Length: 475
Image (tube, rainbow, N blue to C red; front, side):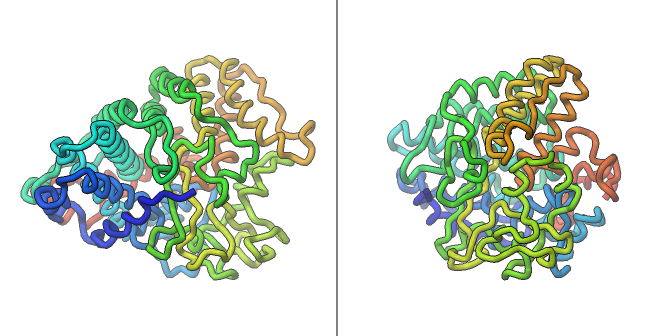
């Protein structure tokens, strides 16, 4: 199901260029006095705040490359024409790697749009419930954009209001302070957002999405007690459950399902709001670019008989979106399946498979991880087993596949949960950031320098524009 507010995304995308967003006059200053006057204006403005989320050609959103190509799940592949992606694989990226500037620009565009909503919408005379929903969405989206920026860059400038151009040269804000603001934004969003959306509003942020993003933030802070508190709040909503069929999370006709907590919408409308992963990840042999090829080490990580392997990875003679996959389709002999679809889309780069940024399966694995880190090993068995049981039920031989993890040893359970995250969430853009937060990236990733590569460099363009910015260590 697709939402009508896709149609408003395109207007924002035309405003995003490759220049630094912080040297632009903010959209709010240009629009607020003349545009934000009615409820309809407020709705259109919050709709535009969703635009930078998408993996489309206009955004040049290479978050996927930061998460996957730098990890032990994928290599760059392709024809080498996208130099920055190759640099990411070998950890030779620099402040001038274009993908970083693109990512900085698109996320601060989203933040600017959210700040416009939060500054201007409160003064509009309109239905209070609608106003609160719009403000709740803006709080959530701002929190999400800042979370992504901290994942990628660490400390970044934090702007919470529409800011005049002559006041934009601000220093970086410590990540800990940004995390605190993310929690405050999520709390406010949870108070105002609906439990569920329907009809044209499917895909908008919900209370559960806000609570889950707060839980994820606490996971990153290693505040396990608070993480469990928010995970409990998500579960208590009573609206989330694992779907029976694992690949329903990545299929066009079964999106926005009971497992979807926060899902970024895409649509094949020929308006630039489609998912470009359909072309960027698909093999060059079938009109794709092949810029994410599966490492054999990832394939080997799956336990024997785990059905999630065939739903995640294309191997010899597998059905491959209307073709038969052959080892020659990839330099590693394996291809990605998630977020790809057949040729029914009008343009390969305009796929309409959504990206589910937070699935309920991940919430359960956060719960297992937090309980384990608190020493509650036996309690951690239940959420871990819920995830494994769903996979087991889809195996060819369920009685002899993916046995329950019954260990009460903390280190063994920690290893089991980390393994489960890799195979359950493979190619869902979590792996590199997981390895970093666990402190084991240097042990597993060739070329990774501990003390440097935990974050990526601040774009040189932004350093040049803002003398208050200090480059991350090692760059």
